[in-house]
Length: 264
Length: 331
Image (cartoon, rainbow over all chains, first blue to last red; front, top):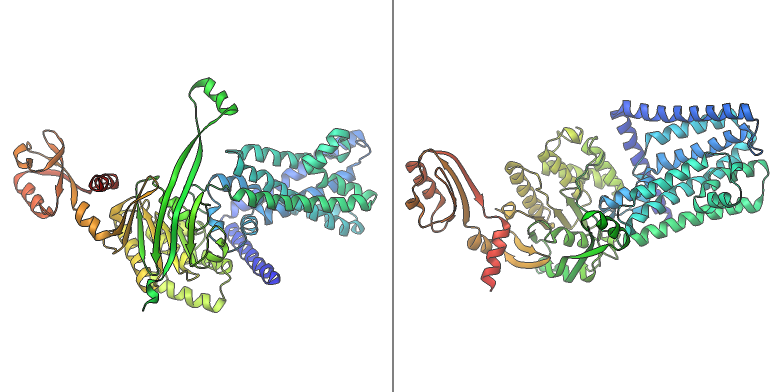
């Protein structure tokens, strides 16, 4: 039963990927520009960090190579979450504008269907950048561990997105509040973990869990610690499950709506 | 065949209330809104009960905000009722929404399901995967529907290049791909001109007759269901005002037409003394006629022989007026 469901969801996932590719061909310029500019954005930021490190040598013990690791973890997990599960950032919009109706009247599991039915070209730019960094700037021996630790990062991004998006089931017009929280998560995860100590460290781990996307994995690359490794996975899975729970709890309060829109 | 008369949708004492914030006026109102917002409770659906039999074509008619869409959304499991019971094919949609989705097709006029930038065929293929339809069955089903709705030459054009009527045909095919027993149509004619509306009516009739699909449709315009023999349910303020044959309502209340005429000559009041005149000026008159007393053709022939008419408008009575008259008769 479960296996059959996974296969059928995977088939649907592939069908959506085909549709995204067709849209990309239909709107070539938009697709190329979005992807390229996100890529460029990443290049510029990393260059700025390079200049800073060139002057300072290290920041609280973290060197430029650590920042490359941060960018590898961040851009690949943003890329996977955003490109393949793009709707995790749009939950609030779907709720407020009554767009959930579409998913609710169809047989597939609501949240699975919601997540796989949208992509964003910007995040493809991130993904490509991260993969190039991984190939050219990271030693091969570290690659398997890095790939393994990207999984919790993706789970945290998607889970956090669903969680803040589900606020709009409870609070009217909480879209901007939720997306601000999500944006903060993204920005914090792009700073060297060493600058956060004490209270800020606690916040970046357990309130806006950016630390688990980048800082903790980078730390684990340097000195592997089983407790933190397990904590990383437990925390991300727990956050993801909590997000699913909160979403379905909130869904009972869904009020739909009659706004006009088209599927793009 | 006794099976034909089986009840497949049963609704009992359905209620739904929405809570909305009331905005207070002025600067102080803004602050008071933040700290102690007032809420207004709107009864969208208030104690609706009805049974629908297999193969029936039922129209929910009522003004905007009457509760038609809310009822339909509760039937499809999108909204949870506050109280009351719904059974569709013996199942409760708020608990068995996913199971029922295989038996129900929906078209929300305001929410197209076709991918706007891609040809309809891509959306069809996607829905085949969503419903896990077997490939050979899907191909056969799609061929049938393409013939039935005559869309073979448009399925490869991007949806944005299709006319509204063509798009609507494709929306129907999309909703019928999984061969549902029941079809919900929420305001399917919204934003359409008379010609497209007519095609729509023909399509709805066709599906009901050929596919034996049970259909519930909603509209705010009673004229939409002209020529479809249908069971009519008029809803106002979340309550059922009328539930019965469309013909009865048509004879009783819809024989009234509203005429608006602009002339070049002065209008003679005596010509209109037996009629209910609503507005009158020197060269313009608005009046009601009851077509079973004064046949429309006679009235118009008379007007054209007597006056030089520059503009003429013939309208149905708005649904609000029909509802008002039904209330008056019930008292």
